[in-house]
Length: 180
Image (tube, rainbow, N blue to C red; front, side, top):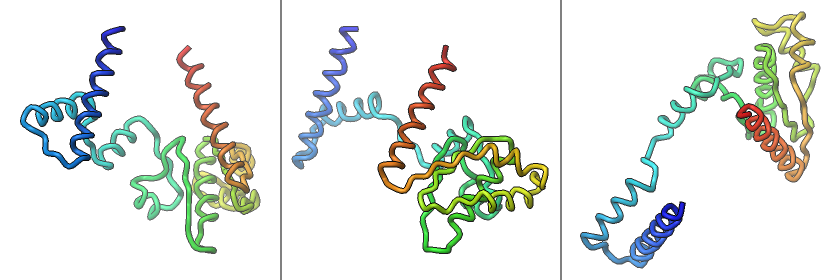
């Protein structure tokens, strides 16, 4: 245990030394360059592209369709499970419609949805209309699908932060319970 503490201090000192030297505009000599290469190989993670990271994520997390093939294509297959989808755009550009479509599509797959409404635009009536028109939906699917959608209103930044913090805490608690 003591050696690990010493090693971490040594690496911190080496990193600080190299950064100070590089930030002051000085060139690294041969040994310093070798040391920088060693630190980069053993301390820093290997660089990976966003595409590689997305591929790794797809191996472990499910993708859900948005209900619109064109948007799914733009997103590389859909929306990741347990992800936060934030939409921005001009007024009347279809943001709320897309959020309702994603919520309806996922709820029809017997999955739960948390819809965080920041503009007071959520409409259970509109969600029910979309569910009833989906291939996996229909009139018989409306009540079960709507029961799987939870709506939280967040009309201030503080309310949104509170909701997100609560979600983080719940996720941590679930992970701890699963490990036991």
